[in-house]
Image (cartoon, rainbow, N blue to C red; front, side, top):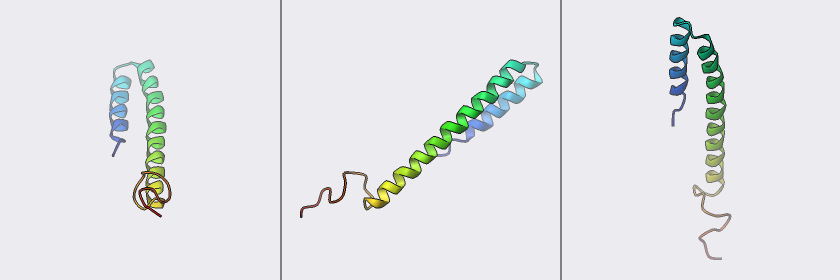
Length: 71
């Protein structure tokens, strides 16, 4: 899922705030963009980690080794 569109929105809002003499809002939007970047990166890392788990489990994230199989 592409989540980085939110960064474009925040940039547009900051541009508006700056152009309309709203410096505190512009600064807050910078901080918000940093939070968004961090959360998007964490989500990306989490999704990558889940993909690796699925690969190790043969494409399934249900149970550990031998889950659903009889010995």
